[in-house]
Structure formats: C-alpha cells, structure tokens
Length: 595
Ligand code: ADP
Image 1 (cartoon, rainbow, N blue to C red):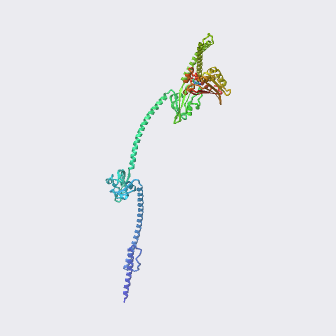
Image 2: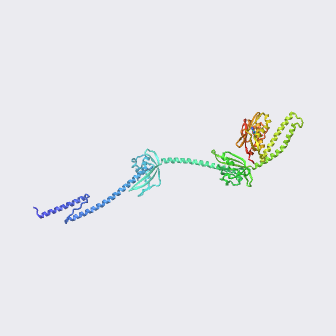
Image 3: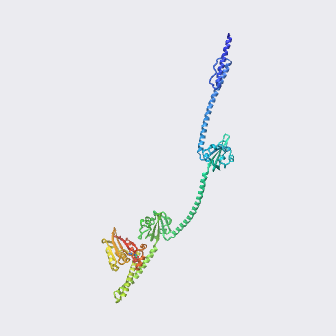
C-alpha cells in the first residue's frame, strides 16, 4: 500500500520526468535546426527553473544568430549571382569577339602550353582546338622557339602587359606548309598564374601583295623616271621652240595678232603693237574689234567685214588689201591683211591675222604707174605717127607698091596696131592703179552695146568663119560708164574669138536676175588650165596654153576688165575646162550708186 509521502514522492518524480522530456524534445528539434519551439512555461521554482530559463535564453540567442546568418547568406548569394552573370557576359563577349577576329588568337600558360585558340587559329593552322590544347606554341610556330616565351617580361600583378613590337616568324600548317606570320604578345596574370595571349597574323597574302606592290612600285618608278626625262626634254625643246617662235614673231616685219574663237586677243607682236599704237601686253584679253581699221575714206570697217571675223565665221583664209590703220599722226597706213582660222580637231578655236604695212608697195606702185603712164605717152606719139605713115604707104601716097611690099607693110601695120593697143592698155592700167579713172555713168542699153561690139568685130569674126550670137530677153538698160563697159565686153568677146578655133561658136547671153544684170560670154575654145585660173585677173598674166598658141597678148585685158567691173560694184568670174572652152560671167548692179 502506498503511503501519502510515497504518493507525493511519486508525483514529483513524474513531473520532473515530464519537464525533462519536454526540454529534451525542444533540444532535439533545435539540434536538427528547428529553433522555433520554446521551452514549456513552468510555474515551478526549483532547481530546473534556472535550467529552463538558460535553455530558453540560449534558444533565443541561437534564433537571432540564425536569422543574422540567413540575411548574410542571402546577400552573399546575390553577390555571387551578380558576379557569375558578369563573368558569363564577358566570357561570351570575349569568345564572340575572338571568334570573329581574322587573326589567330592563342592563349598559353607561362610555359607556352596552349590553353585557348579562336576559330581563325583553327583555320590558319589547320588543327581543331582539341588537337592544339596543351600543345606547345612552338609546334605551330617552330621558328619562334620556346626560348622566346621565356624572355617575355613578367606580367603585372593586375592588367596586362603588351609587348611593344610585333615579332615576325615562320609558322607551320598541319599539312607542313610553312608561311610567314607576325605575332603580337600580351602577358597577363590571373591569381598566381601568368598567361600569354598571342595574336598571330598570316602574312602570306600580305607578303604577296607587298611583293607585287614593290614590283609595281619599281616599275612605276622607272616609268616616272622615263616620263620625267621625256617631259624635261620636251619642256626644254618646247621652251626653246617657244622662245624661238616668240623671237621670230617679235622680229617679224608683219603685225601678228592671235585671237580666241570669240575674237579676244591672246597675242600681239611688236609690229602690230606699233601699228595699233599700243603695247603688246596691254591689249591681251581685249576684243580685237576694239583696234579699229578703216576703209580708204577713213570710215571704220564694221566688225562683220573684218577679215579675222570672216575667217572665224567661215573657217576660210581671207586676204584683203583695201583697209588702213591710222598712223600716230593720223595718216592712213594701207595694210594687207591675211586672216586664217586656227583649227583643232576640225573645230575653229581661234584665228591669226597677219597685217603688213604696204605703204611702200603702194608708193612703188604709184611711181611705177607714173612711169608706165609717162613711158606710154612717150611711146604712143611715135607709134601713132608710124601708123599714119604706114596708112599713107598703103593708100599709095608714096607711089605704087608691089604686092610683096604690100604684104610686108600690112604686117607692119598690124604689129603697129598691136603696139598701140598695148600702149593704150598700159596707160589705162596705170590710170586705174593711180585711181585716176573715174566713172562717168549714164543710161546704157546693154543689148545694143553688146550687139555693136560684135558688129564692129564682124569682119574679123567672118575671116575666121566664126559665129558670135548675142541673146537678150529684152532691152536691158543700166546706169553705168558706157565707154568702160565697152572695154570690158570687147576684151571678153575678142578673147573668146581669139582663143577659139576657126568655125568656132561664141554665145553672148544677157539676162536679168533680181536687181542685177548678168552677161555670160561662152566659147568652146582652148580653155584654161585649172592651176592658172586664179592668176588671170592679175597684171600681165597669161596662161601657158594661150601664150603658146598666140604669141601676141599683153595679159592686161582681164586685169583692166576686173578693175572696171569692181568700180561698178560688180563681179567677174570664170569657169573653164582645158580643151573644152571657157565662160566668163559679169554681174553688174542695175543701178549704180553715185560715187
Ligand atoms: P591677152 O588675151 O592679151 O593675153 P587678157 O588679160 O585678155 O590678155 O587675158 C589673159 C589670159 O587669159 C590670156 O593670155 C589667156 O591665157 C587667158 N584667156 C582669156 N580669155 C580666154 C578664153 N576665152 N579662152 C582661153 N583663155 C583665155
């Protein structure tokens, strides 16, 4: 049987047992990291109470520490995550950049053992990355030698050390082909490890290009040297030529003016500057028309009539001797002007005027005409006397003459007539040249004039069984100098008969075209050699075939005819074919403006 003391003892033991178990359960949970359970509340105040409080305090301290540690851990985790992300980014970026580089990029450790190669390295050396890893660098660049790697400067503790000068070496492809490369090195450190990164450039193409380039450069250099020599020679020659041309132009007695296609002066020589009373340099760039030339009356010649502008317009050479320059004392200086276009690739690019002071020629001409006129007068008197005397003999005033004598006297009479004609022509020419012949215009019936000329020559025409036909549509009258026109047409009709065979047919056709009258004298005679045609209107000019066939002839008739037609403001032209005949055409204005 249990006593009361026994009973009290028993329940206390049970309570202690319960409290120990509760404490043990809290500690057991704490030992596996669960600090959430508190020590059970206990009202008792005994030897366990302090233990309870101590355990509870310890639990709470542990709980706080755990909380702090958890916070720290989270922070660390965040830092680690951020650094990993950064690292991942830069690595990806590095390999993306390295793989797209055209040069080989190889990283080795300090001993020269390959750790990393980019894609270009695989292509350049012919190995996949796996076969290159852990190999010595001098397997692919044997020319470099590992010694070189050892001589590289030690890497700085942070950052990289880049070698100043790239190194050239011979590399070897997997298949044994050797090729030139250029290597740039950088040494760097990570932790305690030293690394070397080499950027290797394949110089094969580069060297080929350099080789080609140096060959081409050599070639070009020699070409340039040749060209320079040639140019220098040409320059010297052209400087020499230019100096020669300039000296020649300067010392020329003729004035020379060069103009561009717009008529602006580009060059003037000394003589021209003298004629124009200026200095050669001053007029360059000016319009040539500003340097005035005049006609015989002192009136300025309009620009369009000036030879240079005619040459620039037509592309033809133009010559004339009718114009004048004013001398410094206001005298008119007669000049002969020859204007020629300057052509380049078929285009007119400018023109050159050559101006010659012909005062002396004009003066000599005048003196000559004076002399001819004087001499002709002196000749005419005795020749006329001879004619009279021969007429007397022929008419029998000196008694009967035998037929043989008559023939000789007749011959003498004809020669004398010819001499008189020559003297007359010379006198007329001298007068015309001296400007002494003035026109005496009146109303001239051209048809009547032509018919009268033919009628007068009829006996001679008949003698040679020739026919001269005059055709005219109607009476045509013009205002002209009848006597002078008679000389013109007499000469043309006489020549047509003279240079035609016996039985020849000559036509004289008069027509009116607009405000002009046209007289055409046509024969089918000996014709004129083409090369002589342009000479025949000059003084004393005769074609070789005519001179051979007819020894008599002065070469003055056509000269006079042209002068007279010019005075009438008309034109005389000639078409001819050797052996087939000639046609002379005279065109005259119907109304002659009074001079
Ligand atoms: P001339 O007849 O007195 O010699 P011209 O001045 O009248 O002198 O003629 C000059 C030259 O022109 C002649 O010598 C001749 O050569 C040539 N001529 C002129 N008219 C004719 C013609 N109708 N047929 C052939 N030649 C001609």
